[in-house]
Amino acid sequence: MWLNELKREGRALVREEKFEKGQERPEMDFGLQLDDREGKQAVISVVEQLGETCKKILILFYYENLPMKDIVGATNFENEQVVRNKKYKCLKQLEQLLEANPTLKETLKNLLHG
View (cartoon, rainbow, N blue to C red):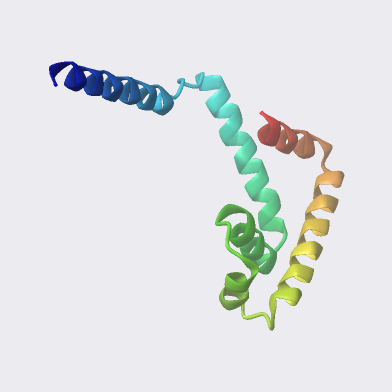
């Protein structure tokens, strides 16, 4: 019985160590934090240019991961298809804004892939 208890404790310690390692996050270099913050601020400024409706739809869909059904209720659109169409138009508008600003486009690409 004592050996079984030791085995259980050993397995528990291994699980705990794995959990602890999974929780560790490397400290970011201050310069990287600053670049990241500036990049995010640039993205926010572009989203602000889209207007309140587009901003709300894109944030609800991409940031809050809400399904279209919930977005319909939050935005007063008629149905899911109308929201899908509006989201598509908002993404096209965002694409045009990024094409007009290649520096911002590169910043956004780096944030997404970085």
